[in-house]
Image (cartoon, rainbow, N blue to C red; front, side, top):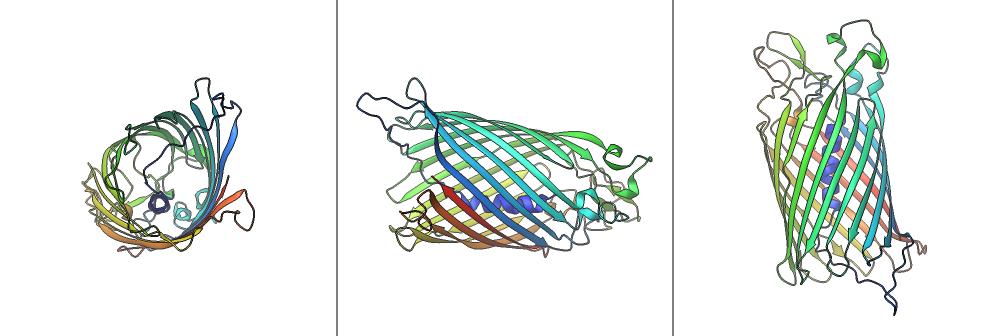
Length: 402
């Protein structure tokens, strides 16, 4: 129910990620080359963010009406490690997230109620990753398991990751596989429901499975220039339409959104990092996206981290995106009654958008506010606008403990 929100957060987290060349840490051993096999806490991250948006093209009411939404998201991750019998490092990353959102448009699924169950919801999503690495070579592999639940869906996820470095550590290849097996509750607009059942029991359910791969190749080109190429094919099958979203036709009829039950996606991206000086880095990013529903999209981004002193930096960023809409989109009341597939979701329309803001990074040698364990504090803000008149703001706080 928060597709717009999730889209912005993906953009935001993409900006937060620094794709610098990964250099493996040396193995810390004593004279006997002994490695402790006890679990050691390496890092703890606590991230809180607040997001709000407004617009007038709600898909729940057929492409018109309020898109007002707010979301408070909190994630906690704990990274532990130890060494196995042969000196290989095991890293365990446990993460749990809790989001709570309110959505005015979702409350229009059944406008006869004072507040429908979907007007506010809480999403909980824990995950666990295990990675085994060879710190001498930098090579590693690992597995991830995840779970997510909220009012209208549950999801089980699994993943595999592999990293290989060249002998000179200047070339790195990463490979990832992910699968998400979702079960959606089929909620219809109140006008299209049948039967006398009330509450959650009146809804059926339908599966939606998503599979994706990621191939990335990073290369140190010069002392100052690094490049990263990413290809991420994906495939979805199952209920891909959001059935509580209405569509209105030129003959005045009303139906629930209907979309194909398969979708292929292919994003291709290139990132270049140029170290202009010891204190300034230019991070550029370009992404091309295509799918078999008709979307063609271009995204370009630049971020410029500026190191003001040894422990404080500021990172302004700007991202521009544009896309063509899916073949099945039409505004309110303009769908053809003979169409097999139809949507009035403006996330799937032709549009362009701007996203800009800045981050502050504070990492003093004696710890934040003199607390040695609190290694880093990062505050980021972003403002998003798009041609459909939707606007949003997101602010996040990241605390890192070591």
